[in-house]
Image 1 (spheres, rainbow, N blue to C red):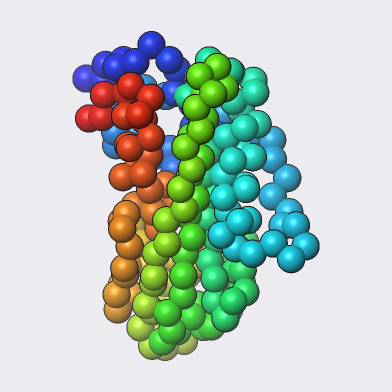
Image 2: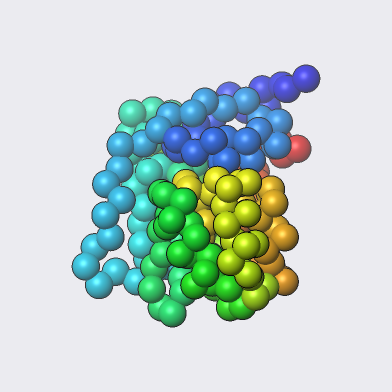
Length: 198
């Protein structure tokens, strides 16, 4: 049974079902409020600044509506050949991304911003994850995309599902970062705000 461990409301500023499922692991009651955020990169903006800014913008958009709440925002991008790779959105896009990643190592950057306007509290961190893909055959890629339908996932794979089978290695300080919300990082921020975790 979940119990309220803190007098302040906790809000996840996200429309991502994956982040919601991850945050539920901590057993702290929270609300979900999708942010109103323009995710267009600024010209010349490098990846780590982009994800940090978007995480902050998402949390800030909701924190302004609920200044007494503790608000979590997060964003994620993939880097390959120094290029920012987004969500594939289509099956063809997912196949193309995975063909490009086959036999290669790519970086996932997952930024978290935790805000409480009333307390002037701000916590920010970006977690880097190195993903090593196996050499993938065309059949493996097509079969995987058909099975997991990773069309709304940056990098075109779901590590929490069959996507883990595409990899030869994963290196990260926070294993849930790759799914979209680094829970070690979030837990640290929530403890700083007085939440009992767990």
